[in-house]
Length: 612
Image (cartoon, rainbow, N blue to C red; front, top):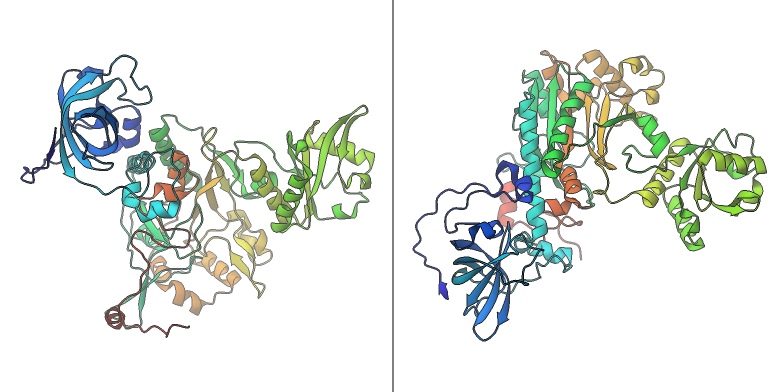
């Protein structure tokens, strides 16, 4: 029986948030909050234990299957799962109708059980269906087996959010945020909100500008991060700050980047670098445990220089080998001109020797696109005389060089050796990218491998005037042992900065901040920033430091990336409720949109004429 909804309903009592603070873990364990309001149970909560009970469920019609002239099987879905309802007279019901079904829990006939469903042993009989809301045919199927174009999914995001994938991902997200808050608060960190309307700050990324209606010609910006605000909190005596912070950067989008993103922002006073890292690692480990039920191993620790040298990346993926091997000493006296370079590095792709020539040509072009002059490849083959190298350049190498190369690379028959000769950092980074291309498993496979990368360079190259450029921001404290090199060899100065990497994804960065005026002056001088310019750009922060700044440092964890890894997604758009496309558009709302002439006048703005 089917009836129309009664619009005269009593006000529903307050509901417990589905999943509560244990959200995803609770769902995975089959634990659900107490149902209330129009329903007695969630769809996915029904089991043989309720046989014979009359229950009410609410949800969306997932599918309807006719069975004879009057009987139909109705699958009703909510966030917790699907339950099958046997309905008389359900012909007018369609997919995505919102319904309330009251019926009796019954065992499915023998042989018709569905082990793929948590409710597969039962179904509802003697059902009364109340239509709460009719629905047009959905623009795409919510069946996980059907692949839908992403732009269509984003255009109808409110429908896409009902899918099992998005329900799982966003509930997992809530679980991560809850676990992070518990960990930070347990360690004495205080949640403090910082402004979204801020002043321009040179932190390395383009900012979104907001025109002031009350002060024409002046602008706020949306914060790239709460960096300066949280440092001011340290000056204000709040010695342990954290925030689940919204940050905004007007930069090109990609799989792991959005205009709007969320980070766990942390700052602490009177703490060492290692102590800050311990607090952050504990919070991340607790989030991983809340989702997976397994605590990850303690993070490894590696310097930036070692990461570049061994893995060719400052975000090394430690789930697989294929480390870079230094071959410089081996070819120190070589007669092969292409190997007369500052650095020669190689990797061994186990079992890769069977790759066809076309694939090897692709790898060569890939290396060139990354900046290398070329790529030397060598197949390791078995002959009667032992292992040999098959390569166009093999004839230019001596027998002793080839034998030593096989030994040093730990190669065996069937392997593929890839070598790059160039400047040190370029050779390492090209091979590091090829290493990832060839060996990196999907981000969610294998163990959760955390690694701290520490001792980054304070400066990253020089500008067109020959002055060093800040690798992070100009308030990063130099390594104590390297302060004396600031005037003589600034590019060799290490910073007290550090990154946390999970399965090859950089989760975030942090540093100990400069709180001493003498060291800050040295850094500004190295960067070519005069006292007048420093006061103009950073005056309010430098002014605060003159009133007593404690030693402090912090970190920021990119939560969208962490959640994507835990959800098994390679794109952070799949763990954000309402993301933008790669072009920065919102297909659902049509944003960005033009303002009316009246709105522009109120803001004191005038647009140039459109070009034909």
